Length: 103
Image (cartoon, rainbow, N blue to C red; front, side, top):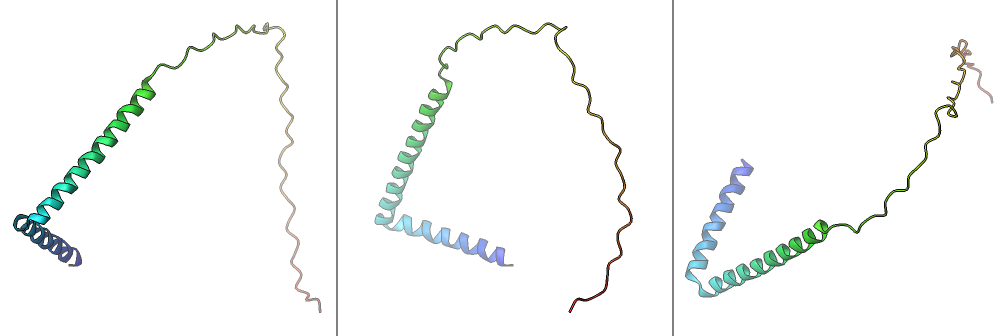
C-alpha cells in the first residue's frame, strides 16, 4: 500500500511540475539551463572516455627479446624421494574430568 502511495504521489508531483514549467517562463529558463549543463557534463565524460580509450589501445613499447635458457639434461635431474609418513594415531581415551573444587 505504501508503494502505491509513493507511486501516485510521484506521478502527481511530476504532473504539477510539468504544468508549472509550461506556464512559468522562469521555470522554462531553469529547465533549459539544466539541460545545457547536463549536455556539457555528458560531453566532458565522453571526451574523457575517448581519451582514456586511446591511451589503453596504444601499442606498448617493444620489449627486449627473451634470453635463451639452457635446459638441464634429463640425466642430471633427480626426483626427490617421497617423505615417509607415519600412520596417524588415535588419541587415547580422554581423561575423566575431576569434579573437585579447590578452595
